[in-house]
Length: 425
Image (tube, rainbow, N blue to C red; front, side, top):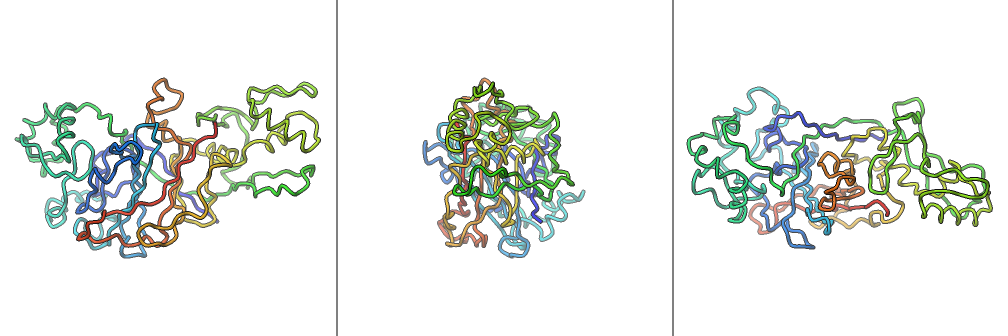
């Protein structure tokens, strides 16, 4: 049995619960850092291609209860918003159960009515916390000289935040106790939306048993004229049964949903030996297939399946079961990693952990449906300035090694491997 945790976006959420005290799994906004005594600096989150600061995309709370040093564990994903770069990083931070910032039972009590009061009545959990930049969410070294209530990492970000609306909020904040007033932000004029941040969304999860697996790799030395072809392995008695109903979807080369009833519907059936299709690459592949096998030159589901990208077919079948999923998480070694193409998959072997040298193993994937929920659908007119990807696969240290102490000059996080695969053009 292979279990997979699926993640879905949720828009009707309590924004206060997407902050550090609640260990959220979420998309966009500012990062909810775990280790609040070692918040990364903006200089540590720079795109290696254009040297601009990267924006926070997503974070996953993935604790390892049986390991003391990773009782609390968070993986943050950042990316450059310049689509020409296509640059992403994954960083891991973690804390033991006993730490300076949260009660030992914080994760169990976080939805209790009196949970917020813990941090007001017990200042030992807040006195060592660093400040975060109001604009980007990184470590802030200064505050607003006017209200002294908000903080910034740089003069540049202070000026940008002033333009977004802090100029209207500053005077009002002077007279508000933001520590005791949980609703203080509702008393302030609303700021304009920052182009630096992605839209903030909560992620809810559910665990499912995976019943559908990709076909085994084909052996090119076997007789291609065999009547049997590789089929996706499907248990028809469970919720993943392929009923081939009218709600089935496909994805085009850009990842856009295309509703259809069966694989290969985009191919127009042949007349005799003539083959008609809108896909030149499919024609070329099919002609090669006919030449190699000597089979009749006509399209049908069997021949189409043979010439199509099997990884992409499996990806489409999995996605159509839960069309809104944006996240797939599984540390099971038998979990079949999704790919959107048979080519350009993750390197083998995966590079080891840069911190301890241990092997890295697959942990989760971010699906392209996320782009739709971020209003970055590639079918929209403004997509030329939006990020784009086929699928993002994250590999992490199998031992979730201990991160260097706060006394070290090294970063207080470990970079993990994130592999970006694009749809084949």
